[in-house]
Picture 1 (spheres, rainbow over the protein chains, first blue to last red):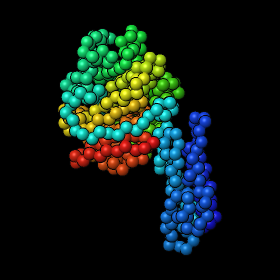
Picture 2: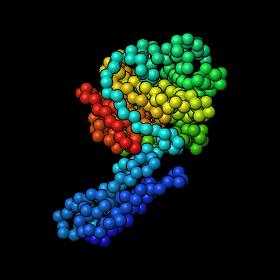
Picture 3: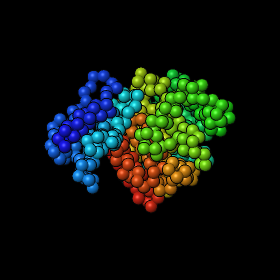
Picture 4: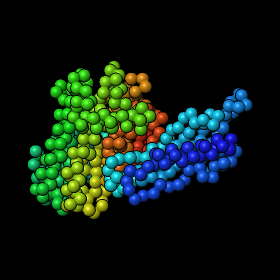
Length: 153
Length: 266
Protein backbone atom coordinates (compact mmCIF):
# COMPACT_ATOMS: atom_id res chain seq x y z
CA UNK A 1 0.00 0.00 0.00
CA UNK A 2 2.91 2.30 0.76
CA UNK A 3 4.17 1.86 -2.76
CA UNK A 4 0.70 2.52 -4.08
CA UNK A 5 0.41 5.76 -2.22
CA UNK A 6 3.81 6.89 -3.40
CA UNK A 7 2.80 5.99 -6.93
CA UNK A 8 -0.39 7.97 -6.50
CA UNK A 9 1.53 10.89 -5.13
CA UNK A 10 3.91 11.04 -8.02
CA UNK A 11 1.14 10.55 -10.55
CA UNK A 12 -0.85 13.28 -8.89
CA UNK A 13 2.16 15.52 -9.10
CA UNK A 14 2.33 14.84 -12.80
CA UNK A 15 -1.35 15.49 -13.29
CA UNK A 16 -1.33 18.66 -11.27
CA UNK A 17 1.69 19.93 -13.13
CA UNK A 18 0.06 18.97 -16.39
CA UNK A 19 -3.15 20.82 -15.61
CA UNK A 20 -1.41 23.82 -14.18
CA UNK A 21 1.24 24.15 -16.86
CA UNK A 22 1.77 27.86 -17.19
CA UNK A 23 0.63 29.30 -20.47
CA UNK A 24 2.00 32.65 -19.53
CA UNK A 25 5.55 33.28 -18.47
CA UNK A 26 6.95 34.54 -15.21
CA UNK A 27 4.84 32.77 -12.72
CA UNK A 28 5.24 29.82 -10.43
CA UNK A 29 2.91 26.97 -9.69
CA UNK A 30 1.94 26.40 -6.09
CA UNK A 31 3.41 23.18 -4.79
CA UNK A 32 0.49 21.89 -2.78
CA UNK A 33 -1.12 18.68 -3.82
CA UNK A 34 2.12 17.12 -4.89
CA UNK A 35 1.89 14.30 -2.42
CA UNK A 36 5.35 15.05 -1.12
CA UNK A 37 4.65 13.58 2.29
CA UNK A 38 2.56 10.71 0.98
CA UNK A 39 3.70 7.37 2.20
CA UNK A 40 1.42 6.53 5.07
CA UNK A 41 -0.28 3.22 4.78
CA UNK A 42 -3.80 4.62 4.79
CA UNK A 43 -3.47 7.36 2.24
CA UNK A 44 -5.82 9.52 4.25
CA UNK A 45 -3.33 11.59 6.20
CA UNK A 46 -1.06 12.60 3.38
CA UNK A 47 -0.88 16.13 2.17
CA UNK A 48 -1.98 14.92 -1.23
CA UNK A 49 -5.53 15.26 -0.04
CA UNK A 50 -8.17 13.01 1.33
CA UNK A 51 -8.86 9.50 0.23
CA UNK A 52 -11.30 6.77 1.04
CA UNK A 53 -10.57 3.12 0.55
CA UNK A 54 -13.35 0.65 -0.08
CA UNK A 55 -12.16 -2.94 0.15
CA UNK A 56 -13.76 -5.18 -2.42
CA UNK A 57 -15.05 -8.64 -1.42
CA UNK A 58 -11.75 -10.35 -2.16
CA UNK A 59 -8.87 -9.56 0.13
CA UNK A 60 -6.57 -8.52 -2.69
CA UNK A 61 -8.70 -6.00 -4.60
CA UNK A 62 -8.78 -2.46 -3.26
CA UNK A 63 -10.33 0.56 -4.93
CA UNK A 64 -9.65 4.00 -3.61
CA UNK A 65 -10.45 7.51 -4.68
CA UNK A 66 -8.00 10.30 -3.96
CA UNK A 67 -8.69 13.96 -4.26
CA UNK A 68 -5.66 16.17 -4.63
CA UNK A 69 -5.44 19.48 -2.89
CA UNK A 70 -6.57 22.38 -5.02
CA UNK A 71 -3.69 24.16 -6.68
CA UNK A 72 -4.11 27.83 -7.40
CA UNK A 73 -3.12 28.98 -10.81
CA UNK A 74 -3.50 32.31 -12.46
CA UNK A 75 -6.57 30.94 -14.21
CA UNK A 76 -8.26 29.50 -11.17
CA UNK A 77 -7.96 26.39 -9.07
CA UNK A 78 -6.96 23.05 -10.45
CA UNK A 79 -7.93 19.92 -8.58
CA UNK A 80 -7.48 16.35 -9.68
CA UNK A 81 -9.28 13.24 -8.49
CA UNK A 82 -7.94 9.80 -9.23
CA UNK A 83 -9.37 6.35 -8.73
CA UNK A 84 -6.97 3.53 -8.01
CA UNK A 85 -7.79 -0.16 -8.17
CA UNK A 86 -5.11 -2.54 -6.94
CA UNK A 87 -2.42 0.02 -7.45
CA UNK A 88 -3.49 0.84 -10.98
CA UNK A 89 -5.00 4.20 -11.77
CA UNK A 90 -8.32 3.47 -13.41
CA UNK A 91 -9.62 7.01 -13.68
CA UNK A 92 -8.26 10.53 -13.46
CA UNK A 93 -10.58 13.48 -13.51
CA UNK A 94 -9.96 17.16 -13.15
CA UNK A 95 -12.76 18.12 -10.78
CA UNK A 96 -11.97 21.81 -10.86
CA UNK A 97 -10.82 23.53 -13.99
CA UNK A 98 -9.08 26.81 -14.34
CA UNK A 99 -11.18 29.39 -16.05
CA UNK A 100 -8.75 29.66 -18.92
CA UNK A 101 -8.92 32.24 -21.60
CA UNK A 102 -6.49 33.52 -24.14
CA UNK A 103 -6.91 37.00 -22.82
CA UNK A 104 -4.94 36.64 -19.62
CA UNK A 105 -4.83 40.36 -19.36
CA UNK A 106 -8.58 40.35 -19.06
CA UNK A 107 -8.51 37.77 -16.29
CA UNK A 108 -5.82 39.41 -14.24
CA UNK A 109 -7.91 42.54 -13.99
CA UNK A 110 -11.12 40.75 -13.09
CA UNK A 111 -12.20 41.03 -9.48
CA UNK A 112 -15.05 38.69 -8.62
CA UNK A 113 -17.98 40.98 -7.93
CA UNK A 114 -20.37 40.28 -5.13
CA UNK A 115 -24.04 40.59 -5.94
CA UNK A 116 -26.00 43.24 -4.17
CA UNK A 117 -28.99 41.32 -3.03
CA UNK A 118 -31.71 43.91 -2.79
CA UNK A 119 -34.66 43.48 -5.07
CA UNK A 120 -35.15 46.75 -6.90
CA UNK A 121 -37.73 48.35 -9.02
CA UNK A 122 -36.24 48.80 -12.47
CA UNK A 123 -36.54 52.55 -12.18
CA UNK A 124 -33.48 52.45 -9.97
CA UNK A 125 -31.11 54.99 -11.43
CA UNK A 126 -27.92 53.20 -10.42
CA UNK A 127 -28.35 50.46 -13.03
CA UNK A 128 -26.62 51.01 -16.36
CA UNK A 129 -27.09 47.68 -18.14
CA UNK A 130 -29.44 44.73 -17.70
CA UNK A 131 -28.75 41.02 -17.97
CA UNK A 132 -31.68 38.80 -18.87
CA UNK A 133 -32.63 35.80 -20.96
CA UNK A 134 -33.07 36.36 -24.68
CA UNK A 135 -36.01 38.57 -25.61
CA UNK A 136 -37.90 38.92 -28.77
CA UNK A 137 -37.39 42.33 -30.31
CA UNK A 138 -40.96 43.13 -29.32
CA UNK A 139 -40.21 42.40 -25.68
CA UNK A 140 -37.09 44.55 -25.85
CA UNK A 141 -39.18 47.53 -26.85
CA UNK A 142 -40.73 47.56 -23.37
CA UNK A 143 -37.63 46.53 -21.49
CA UNK A 144 -35.42 48.30 -19.01
CA UNK A 145 -32.45 47.89 -21.34
CA UNK A 146 -34.36 49.77 -24.02
CA UNK A 147 -35.05 52.56 -21.55
CA UNK A 148 -31.39 52.71 -20.56
CA UNK A 149 -30.33 52.75 -24.20
CA UNK A 150 -32.80 55.50 -25.01
CA UNK A 151 -31.59 57.57 -22.09
CA UNK A 152 -28.08 57.69 -23.51
CA UNK A 153 -28.80 57.94 -27.22
CA UNK B 1 -26.00 54.07 -38.05
CA UNK B 2 -27.94 55.63 -35.25
CA UNK B 3 -26.74 59.15 -34.73
CA UNK B 4 -26.55 60.00 -31.07
CA UNK B 5 -27.84 63.30 -29.85
CA UNK B 6 -25.93 65.34 -27.32
CA UNK B 7 -27.64 65.33 -23.97
CA UNK B 8 -27.22 68.44 -21.92
CA UNK B 9 -28.22 67.06 -18.56
CA UNK B 10 -24.90 66.05 -17.05
CA UNK B 11 -24.82 62.75 -18.90
CA UNK B 12 -22.75 64.15 -21.73
CA UNK B 13 -19.96 61.68 -21.06
CA UNK B 14 -22.21 58.67 -21.54
CA UNK B 15 -23.40 57.72 -25.01
CA UNK B 16 -25.19 54.73 -26.45
CA UNK B 17 -25.69 53.31 -29.93
CA UNK B 18 -28.25 50.63 -30.79
CA UNK B 19 -28.45 48.47 -33.90
CA UNK B 20 -30.51 45.43 -34.78
CA UNK B 21 -28.11 42.53 -35.49
CA UNK B 22 -28.57 38.75 -35.23
CA UNK B 23 -32.27 39.38 -34.80
CA UNK B 24 -31.85 41.38 -31.63
CA UNK B 25 -31.04 44.92 -30.56
CA UNK B 26 -27.39 45.31 -29.69
CA UNK B 27 -26.36 48.35 -27.72
CA UNK B 28 -22.95 49.84 -27.11
CA UNK B 29 -22.51 52.24 -24.21
CA UNK B 30 -19.37 54.33 -23.86
CA UNK B 31 -18.44 56.41 -20.83
CA UNK B 32 -15.70 58.87 -20.16
CA UNK B 33 -14.28 62.12 -21.45
CA UNK B 34 -13.49 60.67 -24.90
CA UNK B 35 -17.00 59.30 -25.43
CA UNK B 36 -18.00 62.15 -27.74
CA UNK B 37 -14.99 62.15 -30.00
CA UNK B 38 -15.57 61.26 -33.64
CA UNK B 39 -12.95 58.56 -33.23
CA UNK B 40 -15.33 56.75 -30.91
CA UNK B 41 -18.09 56.87 -33.55
CA UNK B 42 -15.79 55.24 -36.06
CA UNK B 43 -14.76 52.46 -33.68
CA UNK B 44 -18.37 51.75 -32.68
CA UNK B 45 -19.29 51.48 -36.38
CA UNK B 46 -16.43 49.02 -36.81
CA UNK B 47 -17.77 46.88 -33.93
CA UNK B 48 -21.24 46.75 -35.46
CA UNK B 49 -19.74 45.85 -38.86
CA UNK B 50 -17.83 42.98 -37.28
CA UNK B 51 -21.00 41.72 -35.60
CA UNK B 52 -22.87 41.79 -38.91
CA UNK B 53 -20.04 39.81 -40.51
CA UNK B 54 -20.29 37.20 -37.74
CA UNK B 55 -24.05 37.03 -38.30
CA UNK B 56 -23.53 36.46 -42.03
CA UNK B 57 -21.19 33.59 -41.23
CA UNK B 58 -23.12 31.91 -38.41
CA UNK B 59 -26.77 32.68 -39.09
CA UNK B 60 -29.11 29.69 -38.85
CA UNK B 61 -31.64 31.56 -40.97
CA UNK B 62 -29.49 32.57 -43.92
CA UNK B 63 -29.15 29.61 -46.30
CA UNK B 64 -25.87 31.00 -47.63
CA UNK B 65 -24.16 31.24 -44.24
CA UNK B 66 -21.16 29.04 -43.58
CA UNK B 67 -23.09 27.44 -40.73
CA UNK B 68 -26.08 26.58 -42.93
CA UNK B 69 -23.78 25.05 -45.55
CA UNK B 70 -21.95 23.11 -42.85
CA UNK B 71 -25.26 21.81 -41.49
CA UNK B 72 -26.36 20.73 -44.98
CA UNK B 73 -23.06 18.93 -45.50
CA UNK B 74 -22.03 21.19 -48.37
CA UNK B 75 -19.00 22.36 -46.45
CA UNK B 76 -16.54 20.41 -44.35
CA UNK B 77 -14.80 22.00 -41.36
CA UNK B 78 -11.53 21.83 -43.29
CA UNK B 79 -13.04 23.88 -46.13
CA UNK B 80 -14.80 26.33 -43.83
CA UNK B 81 -13.56 29.73 -42.75
CA UNK B 82 -10.91 29.54 -40.00
CA UNK B 83 -13.37 31.33 -37.71
CA UNK B 84 -15.83 28.46 -38.15
CA UNK B 85 -13.11 26.07 -37.08
CA UNK B 86 -12.36 28.28 -34.09
CA UNK B 87 -16.01 28.13 -33.05
CA UNK B 88 -16.07 24.35 -33.56
CA UNK B 89 -13.05 24.05 -31.31
CA UNK B 90 -14.59 26.31 -28.67
CA UNK B 91 -17.83 24.30 -28.74
CA UNK B 92 -15.78 21.13 -28.18
CA UNK B 93 -14.00 22.75 -25.25
CA UNK B 94 -17.31 23.99 -23.86
CA UNK B 95 -18.79 20.50 -24.02
CA UNK B 96 -15.86 19.12 -22.03
CA UNK B 97 -15.77 21.93 -19.50
CA UNK B 98 -19.48 21.58 -18.75
CA UNK B 99 -19.43 17.77 -18.51
CA UNK B 100 -21.56 17.61 -21.65
CA UNK B 101 -24.25 19.98 -20.45
CA UNK B 102 -23.39 22.57 -23.06
CA UNK B 103 -23.62 20.51 -26.22
CA UNK B 104 -23.59 22.27 -29.59
CA UNK B 105 -24.19 18.90 -31.26
CA UNK B 106 -27.38 18.36 -29.29
CA UNK B 107 -29.01 21.76 -29.37
CA UNK B 108 -31.55 21.44 -32.18
CA UNK B 109 -34.84 19.84 -31.11
CA UNK B 110 -35.34 16.49 -32.82
CA UNK B 111 -32.02 16.68 -34.67
CA UNK B 112 -29.27 15.21 -32.49
CA UNK B 113 -25.83 15.43 -34.07
CA UNK B 114 -26.54 18.63 -36.00
CA UNK B 115 -23.94 21.26 -35.11
CA UNK B 116 -25.48 24.48 -33.83
CA UNK B 117 -23.11 26.84 -32.00
CA UNK B 118 -25.80 29.47 -31.39
CA UNK B 119 -25.35 29.02 -27.62
CA UNK B 120 -21.94 30.65 -27.68
CA UNK B 121 -21.48 32.29 -31.03
CA UNK B 122 -23.21 35.53 -30.07
CA UNK B 123 -21.06 36.23 -27.02
CA UNK B 124 -17.95 34.97 -28.80
CA UNK B 125 -18.68 37.42 -31.61
CA UNK B 126 -19.35 40.28 -29.20
CA UNK B 127 -16.06 39.82 -27.36
CA UNK B 128 -14.21 39.49 -30.67
CA UNK B 129 -15.92 42.43 -32.32
CA UNK B 130 -15.22 44.64 -29.32
CA UNK B 131 -11.45 44.37 -29.70
CA UNK B 132 -11.09 47.75 -31.49
CA UNK B 133 -13.15 49.26 -28.68
CA UNK B 134 -10.81 47.65 -26.20
CA UNK B 135 -7.80 49.19 -27.94
CA UNK B 136 -9.52 52.57 -27.98
CA UNK B 137 -10.32 52.21 -24.28
CA UNK B 138 -6.70 51.50 -23.47
CA UNK B 139 -5.65 54.62 -25.40
CA UNK B 140 -8.42 57.01 -24.45
CA UNK B 141 -9.36 55.80 -20.98
CA UNK B 142 -13.01 55.31 -21.84
CA UNK B 143 -15.16 52.55 -20.38
CA UNK B 144 -17.61 50.58 -22.47
CA UNK B 145 -20.40 48.05 -22.20
CA UNK B 146 -21.91 46.01 -25.02
CA UNK B 147 -25.38 44.59 -24.47
CA UNK B 148 -26.48 41.78 -26.76
CA UNK B 149 -29.80 40.16 -26.05
CA UNK B 150 -29.33 40.22 -22.29
CA UNK B 151 -25.63 39.33 -22.21
CA UNK B 152 -23.36 42.22 -21.31
CA UNK B 153 -19.67 42.74 -22.02
CA UNK B 154 -18.13 45.31 -19.67
CA UNK B 155 -14.90 47.20 -19.23
CA UNK B 156 -14.43 50.09 -16.80
CA UNK B 157 -12.77 53.27 -17.92
CA UNK B 158 -9.62 54.86 -16.52
CA UNK B 159 -11.51 55.80 -13.36
CA UNK B 160 -12.03 52.10 -12.63
CA UNK B 161 -15.70 52.52 -11.82
CA UNK B 162 -17.56 49.27 -12.48
CA UNK B 163 -20.65 49.03 -14.67
CA UNK B 164 -23.75 48.42 -12.58
CA UNK B 165 -25.56 45.51 -14.20
CA UNK B 166 -29.07 44.71 -13.06
CA UNK B 167 -30.19 41.08 -13.16
CA UNK B 168 -33.76 40.88 -14.25
CA UNK B 169 -36.27 38.71 -12.41
CA UNK B 170 -37.34 36.06 -14.95
CA UNK B 171 -40.77 35.92 -13.32
CA UNK B 172 -41.39 39.65 -13.26
CA UNK B 173 -39.57 41.73 -15.83
CA UNK B 174 -40.16 45.01 -14.06
CA UNK B 175 -38.05 43.83 -11.15
CA UNK B 176 -34.31 43.51 -10.72
CA UNK B 177 -33.31 40.66 -8.42
CA UNK B 178 -29.80 41.90 -7.80
CA UNK B 179 -27.26 44.36 -9.08
CA UNK B 180 -23.72 43.47 -9.89
CA UNK B 181 -20.76 45.82 -10.17
CA UNK B 182 -19.03 44.37 -13.23
CA UNK B 183 -15.38 44.98 -13.98
CA UNK B 184 -13.42 43.83 -17.02
CA UNK B 185 -15.45 40.83 -18.14
CA UNK B 186 -19.03 39.94 -18.79
CA UNK B 187 -22.41 39.01 -17.38
CA UNK B 188 -24.53 36.44 -19.21
CA UNK B 189 -28.02 35.16 -18.52
CA UNK B 190 -29.71 32.13 -20.03
CA UNK B 191 -33.22 31.11 -19.30
CA UNK B 192 -36.48 29.68 -20.40
CA UNK B 193 -38.78 32.45 -19.28
CA UNK B 194 -39.06 34.93 -22.11
CA UNK B 195 -39.07 32.89 -25.28
CA UNK B 196 -40.35 29.75 -23.63
CA UNK B 197 -38.19 26.67 -23.20
CA UNK B 198 -35.43 26.71 -25.80
CA UNK B 199 -32.44 25.10 -24.09
CA UNK B 200 -32.38 21.34 -24.45
CA UNK B 201 -31.30 18.86 -21.80
CA UNK B 202 -28.66 17.09 -23.94
CA UNK B 203 -29.24 13.82 -22.08
CA UNK B 204 -32.92 13.63 -22.96
CA UNK B 205 -33.22 15.91 -25.99
CA UNK B 206 -36.18 17.53 -24.24
CA UNK B 207 -36.37 21.20 -23.18
CA UNK B 208 -34.89 21.84 -19.74
CA UNK B 209 -37.43 23.15 -17.23
CA UNK B 210 -35.84 23.10 -13.74
CA UNK B 211 -34.09 26.47 -13.97
CA UNK B 212 -35.97 29.62 -14.93
CA UNK B 213 -32.79 31.60 -15.44
CA UNK B 214 -29.10 31.41 -14.67
CA UNK B 215 -26.80 34.43 -14.62
CA UNK B 216 -23.02 34.06 -14.58
CA UNK B 217 -20.51 36.89 -14.25
CA UNK B 218 -16.87 36.23 -15.02
CA UNK B 219 -13.74 37.46 -16.75
CA UNK B 220 -14.84 36.04 -20.12
CA UNK B 221 -18.32 36.84 -21.46
CA UNK B 222 -18.33 33.80 -23.73
CA UNK B 223 -17.53 31.38 -20.94
CA UNK B 224 -20.05 33.07 -18.65
CA UNK B 225 -22.62 32.46 -21.40
CA UNK B 226 -21.57 28.81 -21.81
CA UNK B 227 -21.81 28.20 -18.06
CA UNK B 228 -25.19 29.94 -17.82
CA UNK B 229 -26.57 27.83 -20.66
CA UNK B 230 -25.18 24.64 -19.10
CA UNK B 231 -26.76 25.57 -15.76
CA UNK B 232 -30.17 25.89 -17.38
CA UNK B 233 -29.72 22.58 -19.23
CA UNK B 234 -28.82 20.64 -16.09
CA UNK B 235 -31.69 21.88 -13.97
CA UNK B 236 -31.64 22.20 -10.20
CA UNK B 237 -28.33 20.33 -9.75
CA UNK B 238 -26.76 23.46 -11.25
CA UNK B 239 -26.88 24.94 -7.76
CA UNK B 240 -24.10 22.55 -6.69
CA UNK B 241 -22.30 22.64 -10.02
CA UNK B 242 -21.69 26.39 -10.01
CA UNK B 243 -19.66 26.00 -6.80
CA UNK B 244 -16.86 24.73 -9.07
CA UNK B 245 -16.87 27.81 -11.31
CA UNK B 246 -13.91 29.60 -9.80
CA UNK B 247 -13.71 33.32 -10.25
CA UNK B 248 -17.38 33.70 -11.08
CA UNK B 249 -20.41 34.98 -9.31
CA UNK B 250 -24.02 34.73 -10.27
CA UNK B 251 -27.57 33.85 -9.54
CA UNK B 252 -29.91 30.99 -10.37
CA UNK B 253 -33.69 31.19 -10.20
CA UNK B 254 -35.19 27.72 -9.93
CA UNK B 255 -38.62 26.75 -11.17
CA UNK B 256 -39.73 26.33 -7.55
CA UNK B 257 -38.93 30.05 -6.98
CA UNK B 258 -35.76 29.37 -5.00
CA UNK B 259 -33.07 31.94 -5.75
CA UNK B 260 -29.47 30.77 -5.35
CA UNK B 261 -26.58 33.24 -5.37
CA UNK B 262 -22.87 32.61 -5.34
CA UNK B 263 -19.55 34.41 -5.46
CA UNK B 264 -16.54 32.11 -5.84
CA UNK B 265 -13.01 33.36 -5.31
CA UNK B 266 -10.54 32.90 -8.17
